Image (cartoon, rainbow, N blue to C red; front, side, top):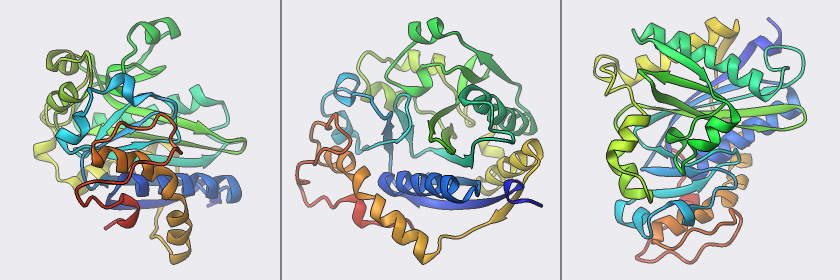
Amino acid sequence: MDQQRRWLFYSDGAAAGPWNMARDEHCLARAAETGRPALRLYAWERPTLSLGRTQRAERDLRPGACRREGVALVRRMTGGRAVLHGTDLTYAVTAPTGPGPFGGGIMATYRTLAGVFVEFLHGLGLSPQVHAYTKRERAELASGICFATPSAFEMLVGGRKLVGSAQRLLPHAFLQHGSLPLAPQAELLARLFQGTTIEEARARQTDLETLGVWSSHSPAEIRGRLARSFEAVLGIELEAATWSPEDEAAVRELVPRYASLEDAGAAGAKPASDPCAPAPAPCGGAVSAAAHPPR
């Protein structure tokens, strides 16, 4: 089997936001350099909002909300709107572009990977729909929250969004990562975001617990089913991988660029609109997430 059909598969535990984002960036750089695709499934060690690459947090978030709720902040290298992590399963796909399943551009890649989630959700007894929104519809429904803002190819169950994804495209490789909520998020989202009510959040997004699925499947089973759906739909073989010391060293070098918002959120400071801007020193003895490698 050629390298394009043998993917590295990382089933990672919980980590701080900067570590998760740095690992995704490392996998993207490796895909661009070596052509080796990878799938990551991972969790978050604390509630975390990941912001889109150019999203202005101070415009969308309630002042001081992250501090009050104990929610960290991190900025993704991908676009889109804010995603709330901590009660979700996050996935990341990194692969080369060009000949093969991901050679048709951004929209074609979204469509291809949507097929994986259709297979996965059907296997859980759900009836997902992939809805294609026009650019005008997406603008009319825009919100600071990813799950309240439709993308071009939306994964819906019962008319509500279930899977939110975002992409970063390089000349020779791409990253698509996204979130599958396992439990309800509406109440916390309403406390975090301006102009958002619990009823509005519930009306536009859903999760596996609300759909009656989460209680009947273990976390390991959910991960296993999703991994098998990737193999079945894409015709690939996943090869279990671990992080080598060399990989971890490379990831550690990337962590600081994602840590400033994490520190600002933990300290209750106003998030910097520039993801590379230095954060104020944490107060109350808070320690930078960059100092905490994944468990």
